[in-house]
Length: 295
Ligand SMILES: Nc1ncnc2c1ncn2[C@@H]1O[C@H](COP(=O)(O)OP(=O)(O)OP(=O)(O)O)[C@@H](O)[C@H]1O
Image 1 (spheres, protein in one colour):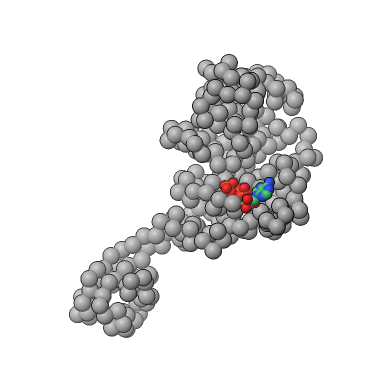
Image 2 (spheres, protein in one colour):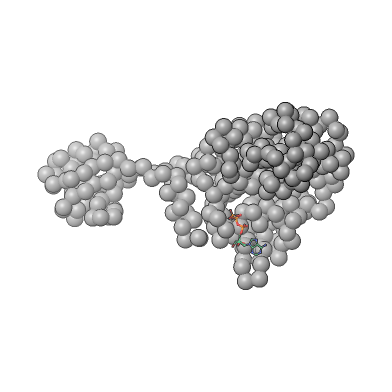
């Protein structure tokens, strides 16, 4: 279980994280979503004891990272995939981590197999492709079989096959009861991967919601009507109990009534119309709207 409580981090005049509070539950993938610079990496670094909060707390299993015994057994993290000594082989990189956390050597081959790198275990980390380096980072995160995983933009730089692989892996691990927090600046990616969303902007919490509820609230569809007589048509619709709001470019937007009803009312009104169409806002648009004021 992850808990962030009133977390604030200042760098000089910059407030990277501003009184942020949220919890992350086990058994599901939680997306940590926000535009660039929203404070996601800083929050993850605070959870991993890599940066000291100015105020508040970032806890894993109820404790700050520095109080965890054998931390790789408690939490696995993927931050910067290239943060591996380039001259070391994948195998030796993982072996070093295993030894310092009293993890049996046999676990190294296991995780290399899990991430599909066993065949290149003797290759130097510096000679790995970005996708392979990303997989090695995931292997290191899984080494201690931890109940909590933190992944910072894990799909960055991956090809579609790699993206699908990491998505499936996260879902599999969540289904086994792990607590998974994964950051991204792409709503579309999170809609496919996450069950729950923590949305941040300018270091503040903007939403803490299930993906299902976010989609239901934000991917609203509406009916757009273009007419040279919007006022007249609005009155006709209002007379039938259908509310129409003004949209851009002198259009009307109707929500809460089926297009069949609206079409019939328009036909009966004899008002000239140039368009009656059903529009759906994309999730990316909803996300931009939500975070727009926070960029
Ligand atoms: N070490 C640092 N020194 C000074 N400012 C920093 C430092 N780390 C982060 N910041 C600033 O804090 C803010 C939040 O950055 P952070 O990296 O946490 O955001 P993010 O949501 O992870 O975005 P990105 O996806 O771009 O990494 C930004 O304005 C950033 O410039």
